[in-house]
Image (spheres, rainbow, N blue to C red):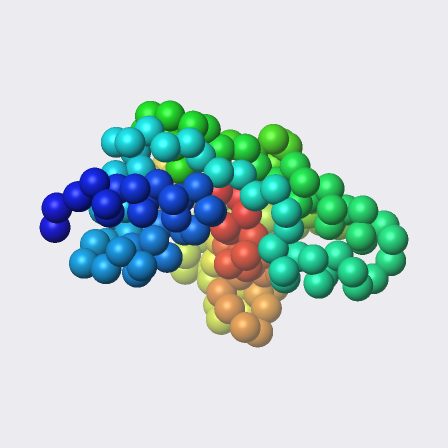
Length: 172
């Protein structure tokens, strides 16, 4: 596909009207969204910021309390600014800092059990099999406290061994 002068002018016109690269590609025909973005980049066309809210945001802003309305207006008014030249012609630069959410695990009374220091031959189905120390050393032993019915460990060691998936993701 060749970029004729007519197609380039139509691209410039549609771009200045605020159409997306996908919409422009559909109107031009025979060209992909990425080709439109590449041409916009090569032509160094200015980025476009939305001056008005989208219809969905306007509808949300009209519903609810006045606080919600002012927050919705502020969010659309300072949403983003786009750069105007180079490889970042379509890249949005956000004015506001992102909100960082800290998840704090509730403090609970944690009681660490005193190990009974059992040897391997002393373990039963009802004792905790949490290993203590280096298996190659002489003083290696197992917790030996009463194990829960659902697994091989006491309540404390089961909580250490089996963390919920959501908490594991949060810790990364």
